[in-house]
Amino acid sequence: MDSTNQEENFFATKVMGHPAGLFVLFFTEMWERFSYYGMRAILVIFLTGAILGDNPGWGWDTSAALSLLGTYALFVYLTPLIGGWLADNKIGYRMAVVIGALLMTLGHASMAVETPTFLYIGITLLILGNGFFKPNMTSIISKMYEGHDDKKDGAYNIFYMGVNAGAFLGIMLCGWIGEKVGWSYGFGLAGIFMLLGMLQFYFAQPLFGEIGGKPKNEKEDMIDTLIDNPETGKDDSGATVKLNKFLVIDYLLIAIFIVSALIFVINDPLSKIGNIDTLNFTVAGMTDSLFFALLAAISFIFLLIIRIPRYVRIERDRMIAFTIFCLFTVFFWAAFEQAAGSLPIYTRDFTDRLLEGGAATTFKIVDLIVTVVPLGIITYVLMSLFRKTFNRIGLSNIILGFSFIIVWVIVIYKLYVEFQSTETEVPVTWFAILNSLYIIMFAPLFTKWWDSKYNPPASVKYFLGLALLG
Image (cartoon, rainbow, N blue to C red):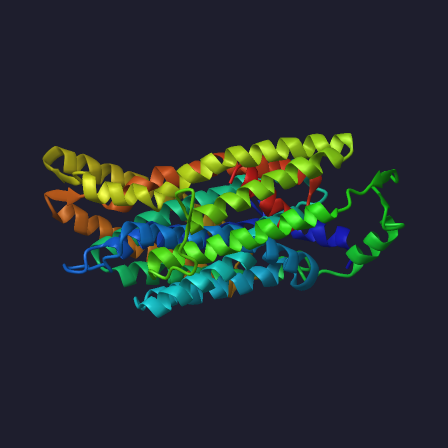
């Protein structure tokens, strides 16, 4: 079957005007974001919690907990570059998603054990799993909608509603379970839904045909055709383009950057978490970690200053614009990551979260509305998917339906417990919900525009989307 016929057959089964496969991706991404934001919301609170009490934490220093969170976030944002490349060139998008989801499931399960060893194993598995999973979901959508650009904007809007819903429900439910019932239950709940998301995606493969499958060798042949010699290449129009070769000074600055960054990445968490000072020196009042972080930043800036002017004009202008966006995005992420770090700590330690009387009743009603209404809408989407696809992917539908039964049971239990009391203590994680939703307002705008205009490889698209808008 040729690709044109396959695409038309793929669009033959529609849900709400879009291919049913889009909604499989919708729910897969929703459960992944549920698990990611659910775990992220309670990690620092658990690590810094009092070691005594009904639901004890580990009593870590704030600096140690935030260092672990920052190191985790660093690798979560880097590993998709590798996962995207592997999917583009070796294993395909769908296999990468399955591998990533499985690794993240094991990671959440490890964290539920609540021992230092399993904590680090769990975080490592989550980092690796995210690298396989994250960049390849949107790439599958891109392949699905080749030749249907008029529907691509709507597809990304729908997809990011799944991201939105997953982040919202994950923070709310994992946060409530973790704080009110037990931390291991919160971590475990994130793992359960990651597993269910992986299974419903895996058993929905018949909907996708060859889309997102193992790549062919056409890309290598195309590169061999375009690149005539080491000095020049040709763009899509056949025009000759001068390549910006790396010079000795470029390689030197890259080496300084990599070595300095690695020293910082390794030394900073070791010194804060394990009190292991691998270098233990100061330069001009700066600690060793701060010195190498600054050295890495300076070497990278010098690399940009040296290389960018050597590009041809159109590429130079794009690089300058991209660099400016990258610099500004530092401030965005510095603020955004506080939702999992300093914000919950401050909320827990310096905010009166106990509500009584009318204030408690008002909060419970608001909590009920913002929980039940979105979940009801998503359940309606689920039923629409069932009606169109149950004959083809029945097992996937059953797994997905079972996951929603679990969610509804937890939501009803949560609301029942809260309405039994005349007062309520607002969960710390509730304050992070609005912050976490900020990303969903902006990420779709850039992703849709960039993908429709350039359709880059998964690894490139992930990095650019992350740098510009998160």
